[in-house]
Image 1 (cartoon, rainbow, N blue to C red):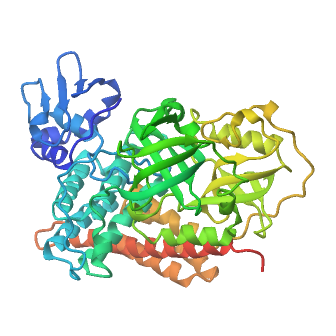
Image 2 (image 1 turned 135 degrees about the vertical axis):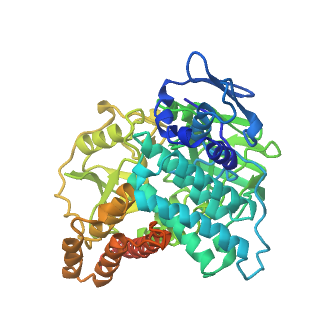
Image 3 (image 1 turned 120 degrees about the vertical axis):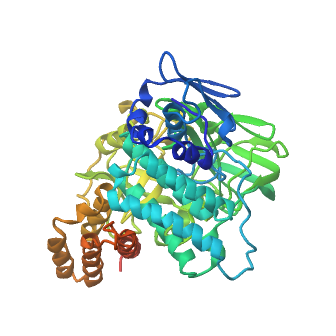
Length: 581
């Protein structure tokens, strides 16, 4: 099912105008969306709820009159509100990454209803910005109060209304982060296989962090506001060579592909496209054509070809434009073992990891293309963790994981084949940094791979066969997994709050706090105990109602704990990527 994207205020208003008796039934109506029949056209989509009721969405769905229902209660009807609540959020940032995978640069739709941020030279945060951030924080505090199970369509509509206000006064970073939370909540509540609780936890951390910076006027106001429109600008003439391609699959129901390229100075550029779809379309999207000027070729071909682009245009984060103003000519590609690509593998691995970790300090939309790519040389190995890569630059092996476990994508199958039938063989790999000495495997190259792969294997697109692999060679057993501080104990409770609300803090907190103390992590134990106290604190006002400030206190304690956990994990991760002493 693929629905047109809907502006946040349209969905929020549809829910707000529902009578109370219908609002209580909204989540039940959304549970039946798998039975809807969606017919798309160039003008929008028609959704048949049942034999008698049809909802029509006319794109762009940026006003209330562009969503109509045939029932007698329309527009204050359950059918219309349910459809609008199920549709993706119309975003002003087409280049923002979605919840899963890398940067699906075209997975969102560009609209022009967002105000420009205040003058970057303005050193102060305005009262309207503080009010908007306070509104978003209050809704997110309610999500932490009740967990995913209590964050239904009504709560999501409240957050979308706050998103609309944040956009209207020029807070794109806050609006984008809040939209990702809404999308994650929808994915979680429909039990989609791509949902990861850790991703939702990270998105909530980003939202509350931005709120905290704005409310308390901390740091650079321009960084807290973010960048509203990510336009393309001329970057001159480029001679680029393809590196690899990976499939995109987002929680918003979009699929596509992203290709990474490099130029003579080893700068990484990306070119991506996405469209509504699911299932097998994610893999096949890499074989659809992509236009760059007068050149038309598939993403898979682009990842192996050369390209001369005259008057190229790109965004500030080095994402290339498909604009027709570009003049391009296809040239012969170069392998990873030739310049300019070879220069990427000559950079020491600790420096590459430092580049990735430094980029994490930026707002998600400001991180340059390829900031998290790892270029590794080594020998394949395997143990209980799966595929490993032993490299001379690190004291222990790197665990190579699958970015997606979706069976329609060949990541898992390819990695298992390499672990079973290619250990002991030298390879050159492109991965995505994922954690302490862990990468998501994206592509591999080796002189023993068949020529039909064109120089390298894109692990999410190409399918290896047993006959393609040379068989295992004798190797020394890999070193054991590097020891890490038990920060997972703190992360476990943070994620439990996200999943179940404050009631999830009752069991095991004292035991885990003591374990953190025993591991010489007193700050971790302190923030965990403070989170426990905030979770148990329930007061009432003069009228006997639960005090809203208790929810805010829980959100503040949760943010304190998750900020510490993120910083501590980042420090531990940086240490794991250092070379031997």
